[in-house]
Length: 78
Image (cartoon, helix red, strand yellow):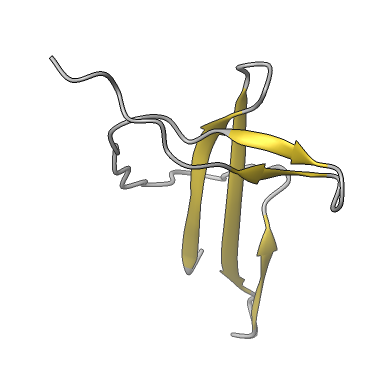
């Protein structure tokens, strides 16, 4: 695995939505990449997660029939 980048958000129903892209290398050295729909890791996969304040929400956009990002909703200040 060369690269793994994405985000975790919440759909309109509150359920998690994972949106991830990956770049992988083939045995001959060629790279391939795209959306990760499912993933099985043979040994280990180290991830570096950055936690941002608030929650990323996605709402279905009927023009594209995709759950697109809405603005982050920051948590209430204490």
